[in-house]
Length: 342
Ligand SMILES: NC(=O)c1ccc[n+]([C@@H]2O[C@H](COP(=O)([O-])OP(=O)(O)OC[C@H]3O[C@@H](n4cnc5c(N)ncnc54)[C@H](OP(=O)(O)O)[C@@H]3O)[C@@H](O)[C@H]2O)c1
Image (tube, rainbow, N blue to C red; front, side, top):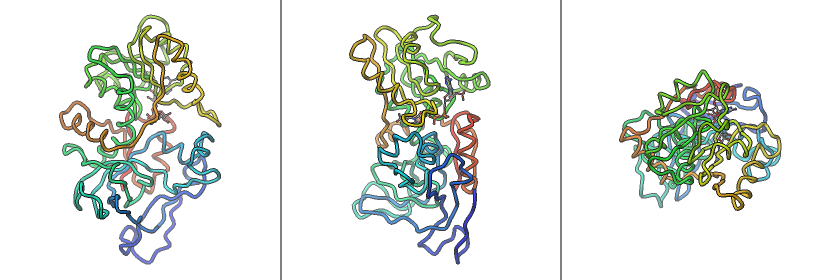
């Protein structure tokens, strides 16, 4: 990752008009080649926006997709056909309110907040107030930055599955960013939880509170030995037939994601097939398209402050090594969340 220093003020100090930020003006799979740290203009805020001074920013697999523009379908969906519309791939943040738009009544300068935006790998971001919430009092900024995107995705997936106390829930991809929240939230909902991950991460998933762990390198979740009321599929992109084999006849499958490497649809075709098939079978098969609203962050804050959910932080990277953070995640090293400190 290269660093540009075209500035007349000390790095990070700016003149009140500029800030340090990760910038990207083209798509690419090598984070060192496409990400740069530069002095850029501070974002302006609109009436409904909040200017946040960022302390920490979460990294998730969506960060990699924004950086690479892969699968191509997302470029057509509005991320930018030939180059990224958003020049900074960071989305999750935690920090302190610096200023508020004229129509914002729910925040004041100095408030500790967490949420999501375009461009969180930066000293400041303009965040729509509806995507921001007070951060949990018992979390650091680093821990708080892990929650937006991954935590809200896990919450929405479990809600979509209408998880009830006592149900048997299988989380496929339990050791990752979304999965580490899904295991804890499902437990908080009163479910019996099994988590699927690789051998080196079994203890980590047990420590999250999973009642059972399934090692996908050694065991086949579709061998007929266990049946689940709900499957949240976050990793591995198993065939629909395999997932249905492990699902109770009236059970619910929610597909969140999974990295197939497919250049055009990236496995989205599997999710669409699940939705189409759902009308013809007794099981409910669906996909999740997560949204980034403050209401989910408010629910998660309650779970976090009551001790039911604690973000699992794998490690942090300083902003100049944002490329290293993304590479670490993409190479499958992390247990839980990777966070960039600003
Ligand atoms: N639908 C939405 O709105 C939405 C929102 C957010 C994320 N997503 C998607 O969700 C996926 C996960 O994101 P993330 O940030 O949680 O990624 P992550 O932190 O890299 O986690 C990936 C998880 O998948 C597991 N995994 C890998 N290969 C597997 C296999 N063959 N069988 C079972 N599990 C396997 C990993 O386990 P090991 O590390 O133990 O191998 C890990 O637990 C991504 O595809 C992302 O794009 C979708």
